[in-house]
Image (cartoon, rainbow over all chains, first blue to last red; front, side, top):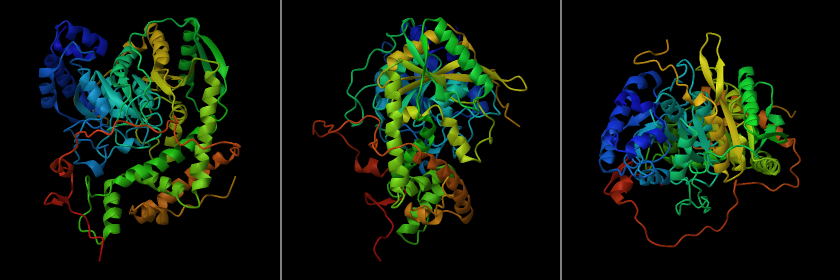
Length: 494
Length: 96
């Protein structure tokens, strides 16, 4: 094994070498630094990298810890003390976090080394990472296409072996959808399973942080480190955390998987549909029973989601007022002008759109018609899942109806971009857990292969179960071993 | 279907303390009109007997020990301030 081979390893493989002292944390970082230098010009996954700080951490890290010496990339929405935390927004361009988010503190306690912050849609609002105010991140499988979003930088970095693993956040699919489009594994934990302290808030009743990794086992290893109660987040649940990695390896006999009939909508790409159907047949051949179930309120999920998420966002983003941190407009005429121009100059178009939408649905006269109604529909969606999980252990669907799409294809039509979340955002409304993992490829007209993601949804706090199912599927297929034909150096789209 | 939703973007922008250009106002008017038209779907299911869900997991009365713990120093708290002086945030004048 030479240094150049290290970045392709999974976290579990890397850990074996580190534990046996076959490589040092410093060698791992140096190998990763070279790989990033090679591929980053092609994909632009990172917003900031601090190798000097990472090397200092590497000097004192205990390689016997569960993630000892493993560098982990962090979405730029999650605070890492001393590092920028910009949410890819101009309004936070010069902001540096003063403390670690709980997930970062826990990663460090497990021996992991945060070393860089990844690109994203501004304030996590988007499904393509095109809404970053800084730059576009390109999909390592086809650099003329988006990596998905909003955690697109984390997904692209892992897919291109420019990170061993990464943290993202998922408010309506922002971990699972980019994982699917970039051909990696991404898990959204149940609401309350992972602390939100130190995440920049988008929609507080929906946000969760979670891992993006090359394998299901790696996601389990990161979940082991980050899950669990936190006195600094009152919505974080006290339930005991199982050893997710130790629970892997069981077979699928006796497992009941539900196929929601409402998810077989028009508009699913035929190749995505075919790949998922094949995956379902494969799971069946591994011993899982496949049962058709109904989630009758599925068609209302997107409308409910966008009312609630935008309402919460408009309230959360009120804190960006140009006083204590962030951008501030020059020479304001008065306080109103100070606020209004600071926010005009600092926020990008999609963030402005959602603030307007959220403010509108919360405003007097419209609150009942939109926001209150959306919350009632949310209850109906939650009940749908309760009823389905009385019959099955997990639900199965495509993660995204389409594979990675070209830049610009959806960015001019917000409603069309919102519909990209059709299979993912109900899980956030219901607070249940979900995972996306590679299950095949769609081939474009010119022969490019684009990854397809399979989504498994589990009951609240049953992460262990969907990780087990995902692991059993993954280990009996080869999809996770396929790497993108990563183009090098200055090979940029024309 | 109800008549097209008219959202007064200019008024809402004032409520949100967010300046918009004329072009943005016009664009958002059209785009958000379509989003709200789509949201009319929410009227279809019968929600008369349904309670609103504000949170995915309803938990209440979460307490922790009321013990002092470390916080930010004044210097740290000011380190990201766009304007500061004498250990204070400088704000825009609020009284004439």
